[in-house]
Length: 311
Image 1 (cartoon, rainbow, N blue to C red):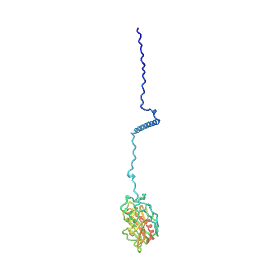
Image 2 (image 1 turned 90 degrees about the vertical axis):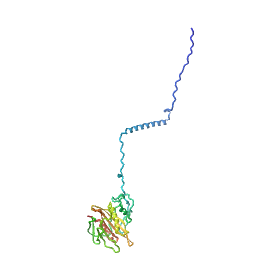
Image 3 (image 1 turned 45 degrees about the vertical axis):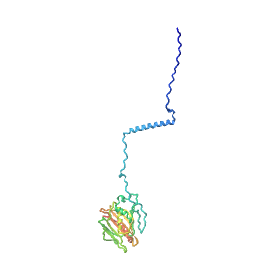
Image 4 (image 1 turned 135 degrees about the vertical axis):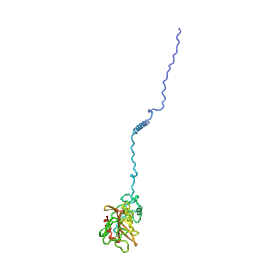
């Protein structure tokens, strides 16, 4: 028998394990801690935004709150200021008279005082002309009562009625004489004085100038008009300005000195007027002026202003 053929053993094949896949980047553990904190904070912010958006979307069906109403022009309108009313100056004593200063027209005023104060919206042409008149200043903002004047009061004998104007006033005895009234309704006068044509005058009539919206403004215009019964260079300085009540009717009282020159000598009259809003077409005017040459009768001005009656 043939001997068995010798066989050569096959070599052992060893298959190497597969190589691990290449890493494309660093893992979380390889990052610095500050970057890890930033990533966590970013994630938290994203989650918060998402939750907030969900809440907003969930409330999207709710009605939107109404906007605050815008004030109308009428509700926010600023009232007109008075044309100009500033502080008055201190009184200056002159021959027993204490006129007070007031600002010239055109000065701004901060206080809307007296309901009777003239505002830019109500200034008429005649009022504007009076405010621009250098012979008199604008009325002071504050009220000033008529003081007791120099002299002794003249006795009165009853009342003198003015049916046309709707008022009555004292009828003086003795030195005051009734005279023809035209162009007024009633007139009383003191005796003539040598060397001058000016003497005491007391008159009533419906106010001879356009009535304004307030009795105060009308009285101001009436005082300017009374300069027609004084020398041509006469100027006015206020001594009183106050509301007046005659019965149930409203009015305004003005006291003032009238300064002028006669034959090169400075002279002065004491004057006052009352403007009463009677139930007629026009307010009633009571006006009295007495020159310094008859100053003994200045107290009669107080008597007149305190005894006016409405018919």
